[in-house]
Amino acid sequence: MYEQDDFQVDSMLGGNQTTLEKYTVKTFGMMAVGLLITAITALILSTVKISVDGFRGPMALMMCYKFNYLPMILLLAEIGVVVTFSARLFKSSIQAVRAMFFAYAILTGFTFSTLQYVYDSTTIYLAFGITAIYFGALCVIGATTKMNLAKIQPILFIGLLCLILFNVAALFMDLSGMERVVCSLGLIIFTGLTAFDTQKMKNLYIEYQDNGEMLSRLSMYSAFDLYLDFINIFLYILRILGNKRD
Image 1 (cartoon, rainbow, N blue to C red):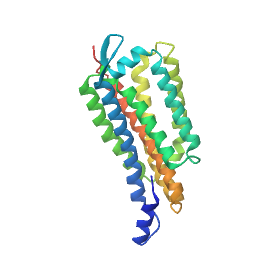
Image 2 (tube, one colour):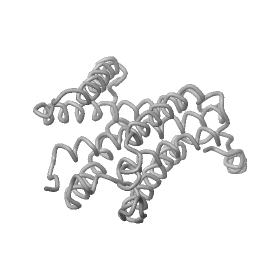
Image 3 (cartoon, rainbow, N blue to C red):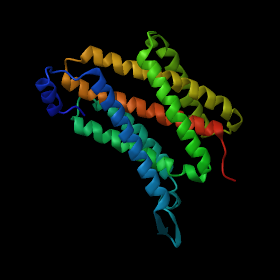
Image 4 (cartoon, helix red, strand yellow):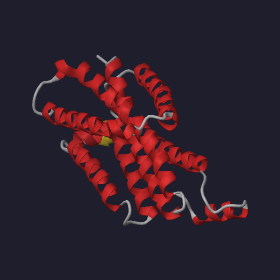
C-alpha cells in the first residue's frame, strides 16, 4: 500500500516519514476499495443472467441452484481467507496481502448479491446510508477520544465470540425469536470495535511511524479490520430494519 515512491516524495518535501494524515487517508482509501469491490461483485452476480439446466436467472441464484453446498463453501472460504490473512500478514509480500483482502471482498460480494431477494431495495439503501453516517461518526470518536479503548477490548471480543457461537447454533436450531436482541447486541459490539480499531490504527502508526515497511502492512491490517466492522454494522442495521420481501 505504501510504495517506495511515496517515501521518496516525502523526502524531497523535507521528511522521510509518512504523516498520520496520509496514513489514515490511505488506510480508509483501501477500505473503501474493498467495499467497492464487494458492491461491484454483488451487482454483477445479481444482474448478469445465465442458464442452468434449462432455467435462466441471475448468476448468483443459478450457481446456488447448481451447487447446493455453495453457501457453506463460501463461508468456509471467507474464514480461510481471514485466518490466512492474519497468519501471513508479516510473512507474505504486500501484493499477496492486498490480494487476500480483495479475495475476501469478492467472496462477501457473492453473499451480498442475494440480499435483494431477501430485503426490498429501499431498506438496503437506507441501511447503507445509516451505516455510512454511523460508521463515520464512530471513526471520528475513535480517532479523537482520550479514553483508552483497549480497556474494553476483552469485553468486545467476548461478545464477538458469543455472537459467533449464536450464529453457529442458529444453523441447527430455530432461534429466530431472538433476532432483534442478537442484532442489537451485534450492533453494540461492532460499535465498540469500530471506535477501538480506529484508535488502534492511530496508535500503531505512532508506534511504527519510522518503519515504512511495517506501516505498509499495518495499513492493510487496519483497512481489513475497518472493512469488516463496516460490513457487520451494515448487516445488523439491515436486519434490525427488517423490511423483507414477501
